[in-house]
Length: 95
Image (cartoon, rainbow, N blue to C red; front, side, top):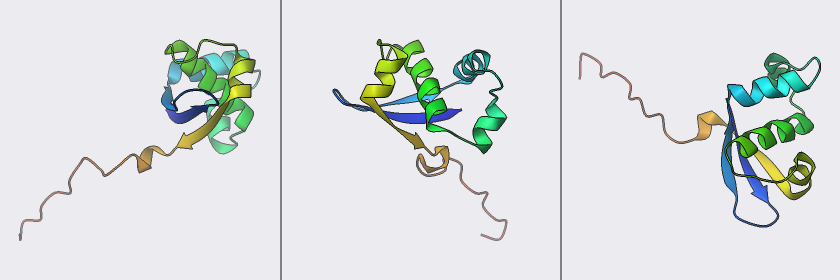
């Protein structure tokens, strides 16, 4: 869904992926929030909440949401830039 690099002030950076569970929880707790709106108009404050939910659920962060926002920087990772495409184009019949 959304892959983020979390860079805490203290400690090593880590990658967290927010899944549908995290997005759904964010939608339930933020009036009028929707994944479609997030995709078309992404706000850093929303990313912090979603990253916090994902990192907490996965046991990567144990503090409060406010502590997460105050001590961590985020970088949104583009899923398309994760490396070379593992699928290979089909070989043409003439080669």
